[in-house]
Length: 265
Image 1 (cartoon, helix red, strand yellow):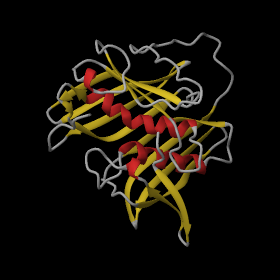
Image 2 (cartoon, helix red, strand yellow):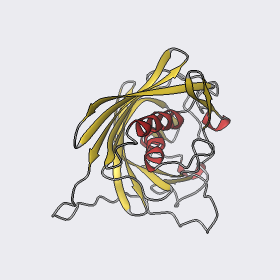
Image 3 (spheres, rainbow, N blue to C red):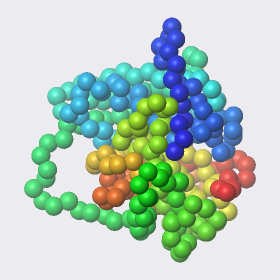
Image 4 (tube, rainbow, N blue to C red):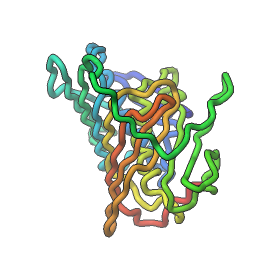
């Protein structure tokens, strides 16, 4: 995955400078959703860096305003700092305006449960591991679509979908964190929930990421779990899974686009 941002420091602190990879497919003047969710998650992680015993369990992203491509910054504040949890809020700013927000719940994990976990398996099989030293491209899957492919064409249908992404470096020069990878994937929930035969016709206004654990490695899959729609509103959820199994969910709320559905070429 190409870097979404590079960083620069000035009198007002750190700024994130958006790269071309961060441009939205809906409108190239704007920044795409996964870049926004990643930037907010990075801000949350920096706020809890002094508490390494805490683990991200739930992050809710409010994507309420389009963010123009260019420079932006984030700021975070701790709402609750307890013995077993921390609640943090982050804002994404362009100039003096707030364009997106996130609230993250970080919990201290204790001993493993005495009873064995219930395991929910996704419909999509795991893709073949890439050869050593090769960074795999984004992969797509759909029920009845003939397996994983790098092309979207075989999956232009109304069946459940899956997308497999690779971390790369979302900020130039920085390794991506497991939470950063999961947060970028959270916005992809809109794709696997609302992508139909005619294309992607809904734009998500939020995403809620719930994690039992963080992803292991630099690859992560997102696959359809459920969808409901009425009028111009669609809601849905998707499973997040890696090569060790399911690790969480992402839930989105979306509005129908005022234009033509996005053609996922």
